[in-house]
Structure formats: C-alpha cells, structure tokens
Image (cartoon, rainbow, N blue to C red; front, side, top):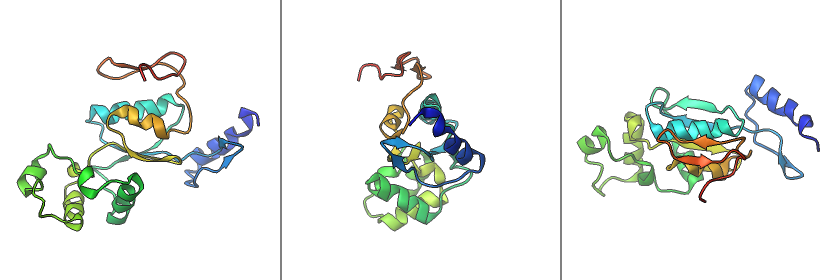
Amino acid sequence: MSRWRRWPCVFLSNLYNVTAPAQPRNGVLFMTDITIYHNPACGTSRNTLALIRNGGVEPTVILYLETPPSRDELKKRIADMGIRVRDLLRKNTEPYEHLGLAEDRFNDDELLDAMLAHPVLINRPIVVTPLGTRLCRPSEAVLGILPEPQKGAFTKEDGEKVIDEYGNRIGH
C-alpha cells in the first residue's frame, strides 16, 4: 500500500485526538497513539521526547508532575512494563529519603500511595506506544517501541550521537 494512503488516518487521529490502538495491516501501522509521561526538567526525558519527534510523530505529552496518573493508570503502566512497583520508584528525591522508602517494609500499595502523593517519586520518562510500554532510561530505550523509523540524525543534549543521517542507530 502506498504511503500516502495511510496519512489520512494519522492526520485524523491527530486532528481529533483519537486514541484507538494501532491496527497493523500487511505489517503497516495505520494509526499511532504515543504518550510520554514527561518532565521537561529532566535531560533523559527531553532526549526521549526528541527521539519520538525525530521519528516524525508528535506524541501526547503528559506533564506527570502537574497531572499525575490515577492509581489504576499507574498500576496498568507498571503491569504493561512487566516491572515491580519498586522498580518505578525514583530514589534520588527528597520524599524517598524523608519517607524512608529504601526500607523493604513497604508493600506495593504503600509505594503506590507514596508515588501518587509525591509524583516526583515516579521515575521517568514512561512511553506508551502500540508496540509496548517502557521506562526509557536511557533515552534510546524508546527506539525499541517506536512504530516508525528515525527520520534523520539525532544527537543527545550531552553531545552523544545516537542516530546517523540515514536514521540508523550508531554503535549498536
């Protein structure tokens, strides 16, 4: 199928913010719905967002510190990533130390309560695509779940070249 025939689906999904899951036909994804739980103060989060955009996609950006996920949404993301609740806990924060979360005495529900009360405890960025959900640390981890290839060169904020001018991963 020619590339121009799938553009209307992508256009309409962006125009009307349709959140239908991608439906592959003949191995081609027609509609994408990519979401990033983003902290603009975090370099890894900024690099991940830039890699998504380098693939020609404008994702839904959730500033999770301002708009934290619901308990059910957070539990779903953790389950979709196949990780433990504790694995999503950001350790180098004041609430982590203050609440004593390093101790093993906290169960998953208590850790979720802490993350919802203090969203800074949620590690980031989390990216959700039709191909999976991932905690993207390092930022290049997003490449494994993007439905579209990179469109050109990409260099991280620290100067590390990740993608060459042909859209191929460097050194991987």
